[in-house]
Length: 345
Image 1 (cartoon, rainbow, N blue to C red):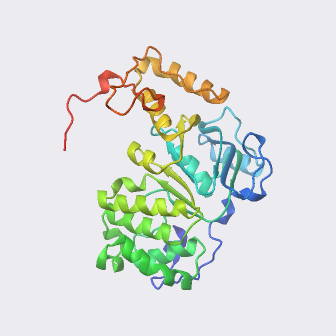
Image 2: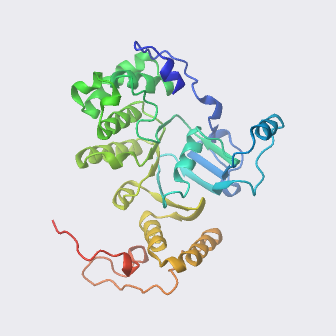
């Protein structure tokens, strides 16, 4: 936030348009090859090819400086592997859901796609302008008012003051925070920050929208408005990456689901099937999870259907519950993690 901190209160949107372009991913339409060696053209919104990210442990300052001067990269065995050989492609107009446990590499992957992190290995290519909600309030200066932060956010995304003037009324109406728009954002609740951040992110009409758990803090009505706007953007051809722990939201708006675990892809396919695999993984007995994860990884690499957990009881749906024998609908839960009672509305 050094740019924001140095900006005066009378912020203007004619700031440099190339803020943060040093780590900008390549253009997918110009990227040769691609996932599995296929050609990549303008029909692709995002291409991720063999991406890995290694965080090296901090060494002695003198050693670190020497490594930087020698341009020495981290050895494969050094440090923590947040991502390992992740590859996928997202066509324009597609919504990809990314699910996984905390620490599985979801946020790291999104930051690399947005250009705020560099991958240790592999390539990222994007087609078009990216607008992202990576962390609640990221890109906002808490000392600035909501109005000033909208102009700051627009400037960082390359919009001119005239363009921001044109869509500011839409941002104000969608956020619906009233007179607080002219108050410092440090006085906002988390829900108000999310309202303004989402409204500002979609108002710039990005080609690619990245949402990382941002909707979790909003009230139910505003979440519905956000999902409706995302659906509208998708119909207009935008590419959307959606990270959420809400299975219902993922199934509702996503065309595909990517399951990440310990930095590796375990599944890439239909949302209901992907969430079913994810739930089977996390609810499998602890002493069998490692074995099941290995089976899922092997099935993904070989292109086979994901297997059931070891010794998993198979539930046969009642004829009247609408599930039938569809494998996408099959459920497996560790009985020890099931609730005893449910609330009926």
